[in-house]
Image (cartoon, rainbow, N blue to C red; front, side):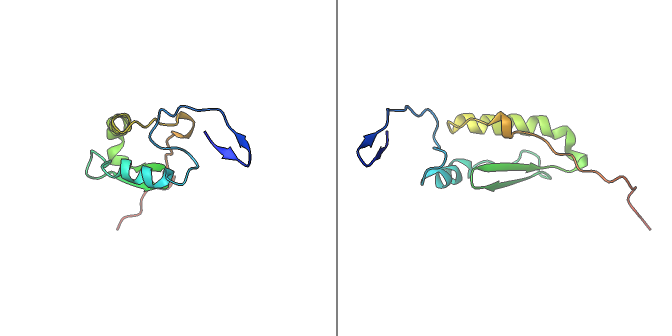
Length: 101
């Protein structure tokens, strides 16, 4: 519950470990996500504020389903939930063949 001047809010029960837009939200995420690493050695994870980005090259596309399951499992262990509206993939490719000598 919160209090602003003389107004007290209703009690809200929190069932996740990171409270969005709170002072402790970002540090809590840093601690919770500190043990989250990609399963495949050539994939990379970037973590910023309360977001996680998985980077995988074309040769590792087959690993993405397993990586996503790994992220979901880690989130569950840390009492976190993924936000489906922010979960997506972005594929970048070149329309020109790679130039080689």
